Image (cartoon, rainbow, N blue to C red; front, side):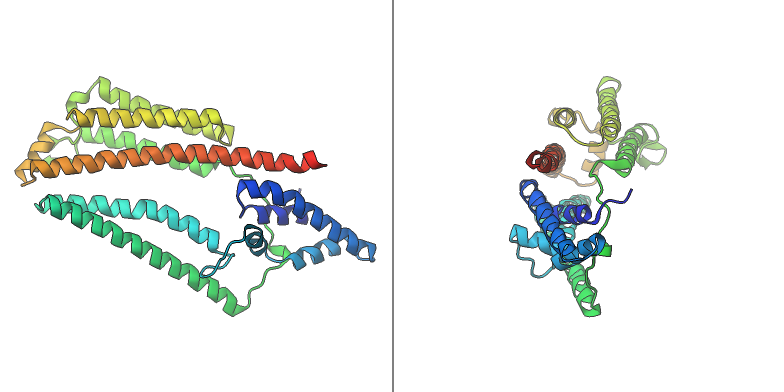
Length: 327
Protein backbone atom coordinates (compact mmCIF):
# COMPACT_ATOMS: atom_id res chain seq x y z
CA UNK A 1 0.00 0.00 0.00
CA UNK A 2 1.38 3.38 -1.04
CA UNK A 3 1.85 5.91 1.74
CA UNK A 4 -0.21 9.11 1.20
CA UNK A 5 1.76 12.05 -0.20
CA UNK A 6 1.36 14.26 2.92
CA UNK A 7 2.75 11.51 5.17
CA UNK A 8 5.67 10.97 2.81
CA UNK A 9 6.33 14.71 2.74
CA UNK A 10 6.23 15.00 6.53
CA UNK A 11 8.54 11.98 6.94
CA UNK A 12 10.96 13.42 4.39
CA UNK A 13 10.99 16.73 6.29
CA UNK A 14 11.33 15.63 9.92
CA UNK A 15 14.15 13.16 9.20
CA UNK A 16 16.48 16.18 8.98
CA UNK A 17 15.42 17.44 12.44
CA UNK A 18 16.45 16.51 15.97
CA UNK A 19 14.08 14.17 17.88
CA UNK A 20 12.88 17.04 20.09
CA UNK A 21 12.08 19.23 17.09
CA UNK A 22 10.40 16.33 15.30
CA UNK A 23 7.83 16.03 18.10
CA UNK A 24 7.00 19.72 17.67
CA UNK A 25 7.08 20.01 13.87
CA UNK A 26 5.27 16.80 12.89
CA UNK A 27 1.77 17.71 14.24
CA UNK A 28 2.18 21.34 13.21
CA UNK A 29 3.08 20.45 9.63
CA UNK A 30 0.34 17.81 9.49
CA UNK A 31 -2.30 20.34 10.51
CA UNK A 32 -0.93 23.01 8.16
CA UNK A 33 -1.04 20.70 5.13
CA UNK A 34 -4.55 19.48 5.99
CA UNK A 35 -5.89 23.04 6.34
CA UNK A 36 -4.31 24.16 3.06
CA UNK A 37 -5.71 21.14 1.20
CA UNK A 38 -9.19 21.68 2.63
CA UNK A 39 -9.07 25.32 1.57
CA UNK A 40 -8.30 24.38 -2.05
CA UNK A 41 -10.95 21.64 -2.06
CA UNK A 42 -13.51 24.19 -0.80
CA UNK A 43 -12.63 26.32 -3.83
CA UNK A 44 -13.56 23.46 -6.17
CA UNK A 45 -10.21 21.69 -6.65
CA UNK A 46 -10.23 17.90 -6.52
CA UNK A 47 -8.54 16.39 -3.44
CA UNK A 48 -5.55 14.75 -5.14
CA UNK A 49 -4.68 17.85 -7.16
CA UNK A 50 -5.05 20.01 -4.06
CA UNK A 51 -2.59 17.80 -2.17
CA UNK A 52 -0.02 18.03 -4.93
CA UNK A 53 -0.43 21.81 -5.22
CA UNK A 54 0.01 22.35 -1.47
CA UNK A 55 3.10 20.15 -1.22
CA UNK A 56 4.62 21.71 -4.32
CA UNK A 57 4.15 25.16 -2.80
CA UNK A 58 5.87 24.02 0.39
CA UNK A 59 8.90 22.99 -1.70
CA UNK A 60 11.84 20.69 -1.05
CA UNK A 61 11.48 19.02 2.39
CA UNK A 62 15.20 19.54 3.07
CA UNK A 63 14.82 23.29 2.56
CA UNK A 64 11.73 23.42 4.76
CA UNK A 65 13.53 21.43 7.49
CA UNK A 66 16.41 23.91 7.37
CA UNK A 67 13.98 26.75 8.02
CA UNK A 68 12.53 24.94 11.05
CA UNK A 69 15.96 24.31 12.56
CA UNK A 70 17.33 27.78 11.69
CA UNK A 71 20.38 26.22 10.07
CA UNK A 72 22.61 28.22 7.77
CA UNK A 73 23.59 25.90 4.96
CA UNK A 74 26.07 27.86 2.91
CA UNK A 75 28.81 25.92 1.16
CA UNK A 76 26.80 22.69 0.95
CA UNK A 77 23.09 23.31 0.36
CA UNK A 78 20.21 21.57 2.15
CA UNK A 79 19.96 18.82 -0.47
CA UNK A 80 23.39 17.41 0.41
CA UNK A 81 24.34 19.07 3.71
CA UNK A 82 23.39 16.26 6.08
CA UNK A 83 24.79 13.55 3.79
CA UNK A 84 28.07 15.51 3.61
CA UNK A 85 28.21 15.94 7.39
CA UNK A 86 27.43 12.27 8.12
CA UNK A 87 30.07 11.00 5.67
CA UNK A 88 32.67 13.51 6.87
CA UNK A 89 32.25 12.48 10.52
CA UNK A 90 32.60 8.79 9.69
CA UNK A 91 35.71 9.29 7.59
CA UNK A 92 37.33 11.51 10.24
CA UNK A 93 36.84 8.72 12.77
CA UNK A 94 38.46 6.10 10.54
CA UNK A 95 41.04 7.58 8.16
CA UNK A 96 43.27 9.62 10.54
CA UNK A 97 43.36 6.77 13.08
CA UNK A 98 44.32 4.26 10.38
CA UNK A 99 47.02 6.58 9.00
CA UNK A 100 48.40 7.17 12.51
CA UNK A 101 48.74 3.44 13.12
CA UNK A 102 50.32 2.70 9.74
CA UNK A 103 52.85 5.56 9.96
CA UNK A 104 53.77 4.70 13.55
CA UNK A 105 54.41 1.09 12.57
CA UNK A 106 56.44 2.15 9.53
CA UNK A 107 58.57 4.52 11.64
CA UNK A 108 59.09 1.73 14.13
CA UNK A 109 60.33 -0.69 11.48
CA UNK A 110 62.56 2.04 10.07
CA UNK A 111 64.27 2.31 13.44
CA UNK A 112 63.05 5.82 14.26
CA UNK A 113 63.39 7.14 17.79
CA UNK A 114 60.45 7.96 20.06
CA UNK A 115 60.19 11.57 18.87
CA UNK A 116 60.14 10.55 15.21
CA UNK A 117 57.41 7.99 15.82
CA UNK A 118 55.12 10.34 17.76
CA UNK A 119 55.74 13.41 15.62
CA UNK A 120 55.54 11.62 12.28
CA UNK A 121 52.40 9.63 13.09
CA UNK A 122 50.49 12.56 14.60
CA UNK A 123 51.50 14.86 11.74
CA UNK A 124 50.41 12.31 9.15
CA UNK A 125 47.07 11.80 10.95
CA UNK A 126 46.39 15.56 11.02
CA UNK A 127 47.31 15.87 7.33
CA UNK A 128 45.02 12.95 6.46
CA UNK A 129 42.17 14.63 8.37
CA UNK A 130 42.67 17.88 6.44
CA UNK A 131 42.68 15.99 3.14
CA UNK A 132 39.46 14.21 4.10
CA UNK A 133 37.77 17.52 4.95
CA UNK A 134 38.93 19.19 1.73
CA UNK A 135 38.17 16.46 -0.80
CA UNK A 136 34.82 15.38 0.67
CA UNK A 137 33.68 19.00 0.83
CA UNK A 138 34.90 19.67 -2.71
CA UNK A 139 32.99 16.70 -4.13
CA UNK A 140 29.73 17.70 -2.42
CA UNK A 141 30.18 21.36 -3.40
CA UNK A 142 30.55 20.29 -7.05
CA UNK A 143 27.43 18.11 -6.77
CA UNK A 144 25.48 21.03 -5.29
CA UNK A 145 26.48 23.43 -8.04
CA UNK A 146 26.10 20.92 -10.86
CA UNK A 147 22.47 20.45 -9.81
CA UNK A 148 21.99 24.21 -9.85
CA UNK A 149 23.54 24.54 -13.30
CA UNK A 150 21.35 21.86 -14.84
CA UNK A 151 18.18 23.43 -13.43
CA UNK A 152 17.13 20.38 -11.42
CA UNK A 153 14.13 21.33 -9.24
CA UNK A 154 12.14 19.51 -6.62
CA UNK A 155 8.61 18.19 -7.20
CA UNK A 156 6.16 15.99 -5.34
CA UNK A 157 7.02 12.89 -7.37
CA UNK A 158 10.47 12.85 -5.75
CA UNK A 159 9.01 12.06 -2.31
CA UNK A 160 10.33 8.66 -1.17
CA UNK A 161 8.39 6.08 0.79
CA UNK A 162 9.19 6.52 4.50
CA UNK A 163 11.43 3.75 5.82
CA UNK A 164 11.61 2.61 9.41
CA UNK A 165 15.13 3.00 10.76
CA UNK A 166 16.36 -0.29 12.15
CA UNK A 167 19.68 -2.18 12.21
CA UNK A 168 18.75 -4.09 9.04
CA UNK A 169 20.10 -7.15 7.33
CA UNK A 170 23.16 -5.38 5.94
CA UNK A 171 24.27 -4.35 9.45
CA UNK A 172 23.85 -7.94 10.62
CA UNK A 173 25.89 -9.28 7.70
CA UNK A 174 28.62 -6.68 8.28
CA UNK A 175 28.81 -7.53 12.00
CA UNK A 176 28.96 -11.28 11.36
CA UNK A 177 31.65 -10.88 8.69
CA UNK A 178 33.77 -8.67 10.93
CA UNK A 179 33.45 -10.93 13.98
CA UNK A 180 34.10 -14.00 11.86
CA UNK A 181 37.28 -12.38 10.56
CA UNK A 182 38.36 -11.69 14.15
CA UNK A 183 38.05 -15.38 14.98
CA UNK A 184 39.93 -16.30 11.81
CA UNK A 185 42.73 -13.83 12.60
CA UNK A 186 43.17 -15.20 16.13
CA UNK A 187 43.29 -18.82 14.96
CA UNK A 188 45.50 -18.05 11.96
CA UNK A 189 47.99 -16.23 14.18
CA UNK A 190 48.27 -19.21 16.49
CA UNK A 191 48.31 -22.05 13.95
CA UNK A 192 50.06 -21.16 10.64
CA UNK A 193 51.17 -17.71 11.87
CA UNK A 194 51.30 -14.34 10.12
CA UNK A 195 55.07 -14.05 10.58
CA UNK A 196 57.34 -16.83 9.30
CA UNK A 197 61.11 -16.83 9.26
CA UNK A 198 62.28 -19.87 7.37
CA UNK A 199 60.33 -22.81 8.73
CA UNK A 200 59.65 -21.06 12.06
CA UNK A 201 56.27 -19.50 12.78
CA UNK A 202 56.25 -16.49 15.13
CA UNK A 203 52.84 -15.77 16.68
CA UNK A 204 51.93 -12.19 17.58
CA UNK A 205 49.68 -13.13 20.50
CA UNK A 206 51.26 -15.18 23.25
CA UNK A 207 50.64 -18.95 22.97
CA UNK A 208 50.54 -18.96 26.79
CA UNK A 209 47.06 -17.43 26.52
CA UNK A 210 45.74 -20.86 25.63
CA UNK A 211 43.48 -22.29 26.73
CA UNK A 212 41.60 -20.11 29.22
CA UNK A 213 42.45 -16.54 28.22
CA UNK A 214 42.07 -17.26 24.51
CA UNK A 215 38.84 -19.18 25.07
CA UNK A 216 37.64 -16.13 27.01
CA UNK A 217 38.34 -13.93 23.98
CA UNK A 218 36.58 -16.34 21.63
CA UNK A 219 33.70 -16.44 24.10
CA UNK A 220 33.40 -12.64 24.03
CA UNK A 221 33.39 -12.71 20.22
CA UNK A 222 30.72 -15.41 20.33
CA UNK A 223 28.59 -13.23 22.61
CA UNK A 224 29.04 -10.33 20.18
CA UNK A 225 27.75 -12.57 17.38
CA UNK A 226 24.73 -13.51 19.49
CA UNK A 227 24.13 -9.84 20.28
CA UNK A 228 24.22 -8.90 16.58
CA UNK A 229 21.60 -11.57 15.84
CA UNK A 230 19.44 -10.46 18.79
CA UNK A 231 19.62 -6.84 17.63
CA UNK A 232 18.47 -7.88 14.17
CA UNK A 233 15.55 -9.88 15.61
CA UNK A 234 14.46 -6.97 17.83
CA UNK A 235 14.77 -4.61 14.83
CA UNK A 236 15.61 -1.58 16.98
CA UNK A 237 17.67 -0.53 19.99
CA UNK A 238 16.34 -0.38 23.54
CA UNK A 239 17.82 0.13 27.01
CA UNK A 240 18.37 -3.60 27.57
CA UNK A 241 20.33 -3.97 24.34
CA UNK A 242 22.35 -0.84 25.12
CA UNK A 243 23.29 -2.31 28.52
CA UNK A 244 24.31 -5.62 26.93
CA UNK A 245 26.39 -3.75 24.35
CA UNK A 246 28.08 -1.76 27.14
CA UNK A 247 28.90 -4.91 29.12
CA UNK A 248 30.39 -6.64 26.06
CA UNK A 249 32.54 -3.61 25.22
CA UNK A 250 33.79 -3.39 28.81
CA UNK A 251 34.59 -7.13 28.81
CA UNK A 252 36.63 -6.85 25.61
CA UNK A 253 38.47 -3.75 26.83
CA UNK A 254 39.24 -5.42 30.18
CA UNK A 255 40.54 -8.54 28.46
CA UNK A 256 42.93 -6.57 26.24
CA UNK A 257 44.15 -4.04 28.80
CA UNK A 258 44.66 -6.48 31.67
CA UNK A 259 46.90 -8.70 29.53
CA UNK A 260 48.65 -5.70 27.94
CA UNK A 261 49.50 -4.13 31.31
CA UNK A 262 50.84 -7.43 32.67
CA UNK A 263 52.95 -7.93 29.53
CA UNK A 264 51.19 -11.18 28.67
CA UNK A 265 49.39 -10.19 25.47
CA UNK A 266 52.18 -10.48 22.91
CA UNK A 267 54.47 -13.46 22.47
CA UNK A 268 58.10 -13.33 23.59
CA UNK A 269 59.24 -14.40 20.10
CA UNK A 270 57.45 -11.46 18.54
CA UNK A 271 58.97 -8.99 21.02
CA UNK A 272 62.44 -10.48 20.52
CA UNK A 273 62.03 -10.12 16.77
CA UNK A 274 61.18 -6.45 17.22
CA UNK A 275 64.24 -5.92 19.44
CA UNK A 276 66.46 -7.73 16.93
CA UNK A 277 65.25 -5.23 14.30
CA UNK A 278 66.55 -2.28 16.33
CA UNK A 279 63.25 -1.43 18.03
CA UNK A 280 64.06 0.05 21.42
CA UNK A 281 62.21 -0.61 24.66
CA UNK A 282 60.88 2.95 24.69
CA UNK A 283 59.46 2.50 21.21
CA UNK A 284 57.76 -0.75 22.19
CA UNK A 285 56.25 1.00 25.21
CA UNK A 286 54.96 3.82 22.99
CA UNK A 287 53.36 1.37 20.57
CA UNK A 288 51.73 -0.47 23.48
CA UNK A 289 50.29 2.79 24.83
CA UNK A 290 48.95 3.77 21.39
CA UNK A 291 47.45 0.31 20.97
CA UNK A 292 45.79 0.46 24.39
CA UNK A 293 44.35 3.92 23.76
CA UNK A 294 43.07 2.83 20.34
CA UNK A 295 41.23 -0.13 21.84
CA UNK A 296 39.78 2.15 24.52
CA UNK A 297 38.56 4.71 21.99
CA UNK A 298 36.89 2.01 19.89
CA UNK A 299 35.13 0.53 22.93
CA UNK A 300 33.97 3.92 24.24
CA UNK A 301 32.68 4.87 20.79
CA UNK A 302 30.77 1.59 20.54
CA UNK A 303 29.15 2.20 23.94
CA UNK A 304 28.19 5.80 23.12
CA UNK A 305 26.84 4.77 19.72
CA UNK A 306 24.54 2.17 21.31
CA UNK A 307 23.09 4.64 23.83
CA UNK A 308 22.66 7.38 21.20
CA UNK A 309 20.71 4.98 18.97
CA UNK A 310 18.58 3.93 21.95
CA UNK A 311 17.79 7.58 22.71
CA UNK A 312 16.87 8.26 19.08
CA UNK A 313 14.49 5.29 18.97
CA UNK A 314 12.77 6.51 22.15
CA UNK A 315 12.50 10.05 20.85
CA UNK A 316 11.14 8.82 17.53
CA UNK A 317 8.47 6.70 19.27
CA UNK A 318 7.47 9.69 21.38
CA UNK A 319 7.19 11.85 18.26
CA UNK A 320 4.91 9.31 16.57
CA UNK A 321 2.65 9.12 19.63
CA UNK A 322 2.38 12.90 19.87
CA UNK A 323 -0.08 13.41 16.96
CA UNK A 324 -2.33 10.63 18.29
CA UNK A 325 -2.38 12.28 21.72
CA UNK A 326 -3.31 15.69 20.24
CA UNK A 327 -6.17 14.18 18.28
